[in-house]
Image (tube, rainbow over all chains, first blue to last red; front, top):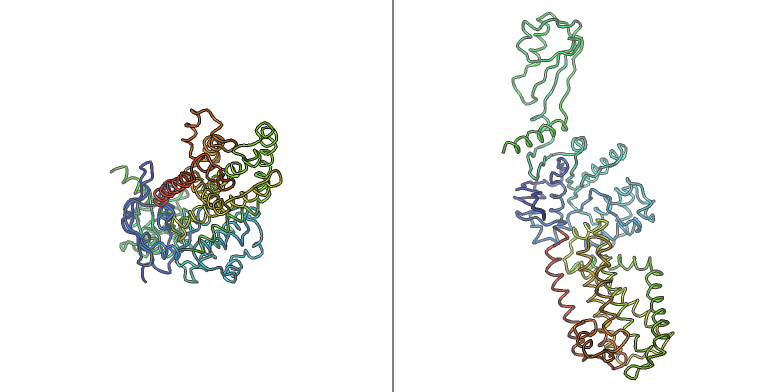
Length: 314
Length: 253
């Protein structure tokens, strides 16, 4: 699949000499949902704003559909839409005017049929004559999405799309994002809700302190960096670890009845069957077996911690 | 050119004017009427004529200029500062619009509003005094050029302001005194020689003088100097905006 977005060595300093982005390199494939993860202040929004032309970056190049975003800003900006993190809307304007205004800004001829379809798709049609100030937070978020889609972009940036929304609405938003992607829109979302990235994305990048520290497919990432824990519940407690079980590095719970053994998903050396055999050979009867896999959140925390330690060392 | 984009900004701004039409028009009409009551009746009873023109009629161009200058500045500065304040500016910056197109949309709307208000003031003035316009085309030339120039100036204020208070500082502390001291309500020939010379340093004097010439063919300075002054301010504003706004200074930092 071809790259729709190519970011090469992008660096951005703010006025007070704070380095917001440092040599960022990233390629986004057409048609994917890409999640940019990072703690607050990591540079997620700055990166998105740099791509969309909202802030200037200092060095490097950004290309959309193989076109430089500065030299060909008219063509590239027509291809992008952005949903900001904050509910930045003109409170006294109606939903209809707000969305049509956005379409006009992006140089598109008025198309009331398309806007009607879009508002219906986002369940906003019955609110079209309402002023923004009369809408709930969730509805405002939808208006922002409608505005970003008003000019039919190919590449949509969602900056923390579900920040401060309730669980129900979050799931609702996820469905909207999935539907847009099915319709052919490439989506880049920033989030610090790992479950959001886990639910939606095909690939994930982790950004910390202005640097991209990892880019990978979500499933591969979980497999590569994730750990799995097997919990073996026994009928009788283990009095003393000896015999065949002494070679394993496992932990016991307070009752001495549950063995927890953690292993890396990518490791070829782990033989669970052998462990189970050894448990039996040492004379214990197995009551139940459970496995737990590390979430993207745990991987993310681990990566950030490692990266911060490295920064301190350097 | 992104004509749809320019139109979107222009219509959006004019829509705001429409929504607040009463406030937008009531304020200049009431102010003009008060000026006529205070200056026209109270002072006008002592100064009957200046340069052969009835005092009430004489002050009309100055009053229009005072309103055009303040309205152009406040309309444009507010129009550009407001999206900065609400953060809706992101959309304009992310749109395929050049700096020129953005400025054209905002300044065009601000200047249009000022022109509408200027015309309303001329109509209002007609209720109080006889207003004669000897050179209507020249009058329109000055009116349009002044509206655009000071809307550009307002746009610069909107770019730099750090708060709503900041939008008021330059109009209140600089523009209003310059207009009042620029011969809006008197001819500089009525001043002592020293103050006449000082008045010549005031650029607004040249605008009012040129504008008054288009009404009654009387002026404090030559028409050429007046035209040159307004064009100089216009070019200065254009150069400043081109340099700062196109580089994203204070907007895209």
